Image (cartoon, rainbow, N blue to C red):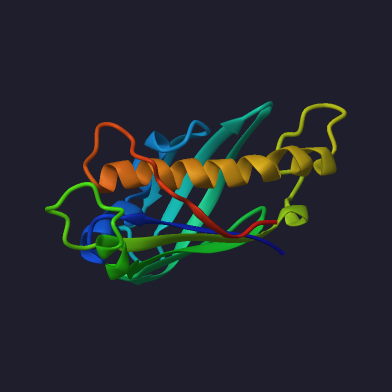
Amino acid sequence: MDKILLSTVAYRPPEEVFPYVRSFTEYPRYTDHLKAVDVHGDGGVGSIYDLRLAWWKLGYTARSKVVDVSPPTSLEWQLVKDVDARGEWRIEPEPDAVSDGGVVDDEIESASRIYFEAVYDPYSADTTAISLPRFVSLDRVVDKVEPRLVSEAESVVQRLVMDIEGRTEPRDVELTIHELP
């Protein structure tokens, strides 16, 4: 299994961060390759999200299921078809970020560390479910997709922070990469 784990700080308390993390329907705004999200359920445990992706010569709909929700600290998910993958959004208070001089607004009183984790087996993909171009092997697709997964995760987290903080202009969002495939 491969793993991506990265985090960053948002200058809002966990209670204000969590609704953004939970709002999967907004995610197409955060990435170039997620085209739409269809929701089946109320957003709680058992809800299904069909994530329609397009990249390179590939189109695919990932079906993600919410397996645990613990507001305002955690949302766990897993893919339920075609690929063995699961992950978590985790939010923890980060009081040191407010006092360490990194804050540009004196009115900011709290901060949170947002973690994004994805654990997956790229070779578990059902090749009949993914329409591969002619003469393109799964190995070649995995070699192309894995670096994109990391950059997409980074992009999603950076753009998510902009929304959480209500910014119209991006700020330097420092990403901490804890683990990569």
